Length: 94
Image (cartoon, rainbow, N blue to C red):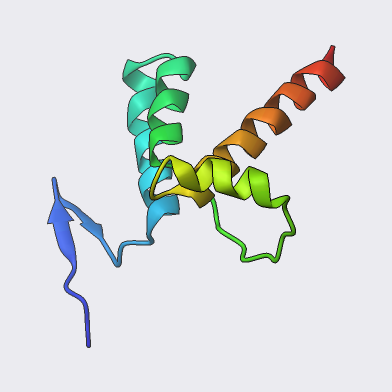
């Protein structure tokens, strides 16, 4: 199936290149108007890290504690690990 070309302000934009294209376009337009912090805030909202399936052995009580709070326990475990990772990164940078 052939995609249509989109024309905007006398420019042809060929096929969209996904999130990378959107981020580059966002950076280019935002650099003119906003400072680097605002640009990074917008980019991080769009950022979605790749997920990698793993087999992980955790203590049963730890899993039960996360599951007790309902759906999304894997996301909560991931967030807890990420928070720990970020804290460790700050300590090693100092």
